[in-house]
Image (cartoon, rainbow over all chains, first blue to last red; front, side, top):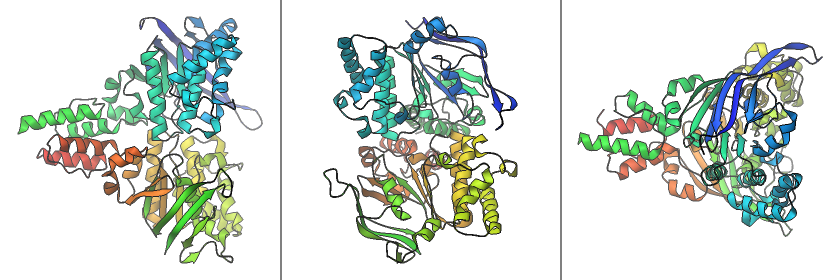
Length: 290
Length: 282
């Protein structure tokens, strides 16, 4: 299934016109500049980049919230510029935003999750079925009767995700879904995203500033000044510590520790991603030494 | 002089069926010049705690002393207190509102009733302290980048010349470089001016690199209060209350368990690196 195309951009460029207070044109900014990328069905993709690198603007093209100035975007084979595809695209590519409080409208959790399928005209019996499945998929079923106001940030964000899943999308785009959450909330949301990807086979595109969240991604794209500056597996990307720092980014703390040890002469491989990898390597070297 | 909290409790919706304690019998001393990390998950009481430090909230029971005086005494000047204990809220850039950067920073000192000259001098100094270039002074704050806006918001509090600076999640939403820049700025402010700094954060990694002392809140209580390395020794308990020690702490623990001769006290990448190299006799 992983060879089927989910999403593709071709020379995608997006410009916006800057205006001063009187509305006079000050100039044109290219927020996205000649981006070519493709995402296969079932992939877990991460997009990294500093504030203002163009990653959110890019993501908004993936479900037709923005249209390219030049180039094109295909979602599940549909060109986003064709109006007749708009609703199919929005249903197939769901979006999760940063602030959970801006995305919940229902007074009761299950009502909120049912809002999407209801708008799609799904029969009532099936709506309830979908609500139940979706809430179970993100581990929020026991809160179905709760008021969203009484949930934590991570729980609210999982309800938002359930609301998207209830529309049976093939792809979910998450734009910094954990930026406003505490460590527990972040873990819950990332765990839910990985489970949807692995169990349900939903394509995930995750945008984040937290490097530890992307080590399990299939591929990473790194954005800078509207371009895709780097792409590869997490190991390939995180092997380039200095390059990432130039791009205002970082590597996970264990990766940095491994890199520092290597610089001082310990034979540690590049691109260590997890605690276990580092501890295994070091204990092996230690055993050889003694 | 110092801030002293003496058996402070705060109960939300007291006298109703919804009553619940956000702070329960908290006693703390915050001496002058300390750099403190205040940590806890959402709902642990840390925001309630910081709002008590400058008198925005009044304890249900217990007392708070600033420089030896009870801040809830009838004749206490709480307006002056709020200038001395500056609070930078989460996403402070949402509170920028003036037409240009300079006027925005002037707003605080102007409200203290200072002369125009003194106000502008303070605004200028504060913007210099946060490292904003002159070229930005007369731009709209809304045209700045996220990191720059946050600097302007911090300058607005610094212009009040606070003795204590409290920052609630100052790095939320910033990219890694922006995060390091803001934390570096705060650390420099602390060492240059000697002011007391309380940094509220979710990230043990961020805090471990900078602070002298960590206070961990859980369910309205102080769960731990010590230097970073002693707090991180309790990494198992930290996990149980929804937090975690820095990744390097776990690495050191696991290396030790695997038989390497390392101390488990490292809390930063540099300390861990040096400790591991020592074990390898390098």
